[in-house]
Length: 144
Image (cartoon, rainbow, N blue to C red):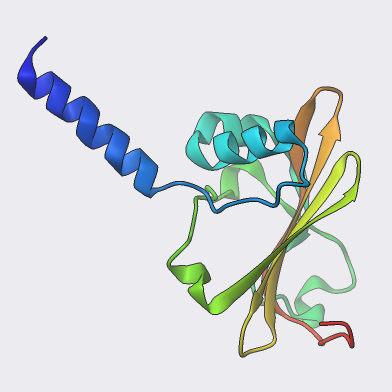
């Protein structure tokens, strides 16, 4: 085997390992954990596992801007979601199994009232992103 090729493989493996998604709680289904890893690593897989138009909220949504209507992310406007460990240092990650086929992930800023939320659902044998609210202000609840 060509030594340069072997070096490229090793460097690629190290780069991928450094981009690893954050650790997930052990109580999450194993198939969700596999999905979550692939979702952040493979852009084609991610696009195939989003229910477009995707319900949610844009970043810093103002009620006046939405005019009381629902917001939907469009496939052509989607920005790929990748692991963001450096940015997430200021956030607390909360991943909850809401039911056997529903997972909610929240990133809540440690100091400011900012939060982002994603919801995933299992449909058939596959997991999908079904809701995404970009970074927005929120009202702190008593249990937070």
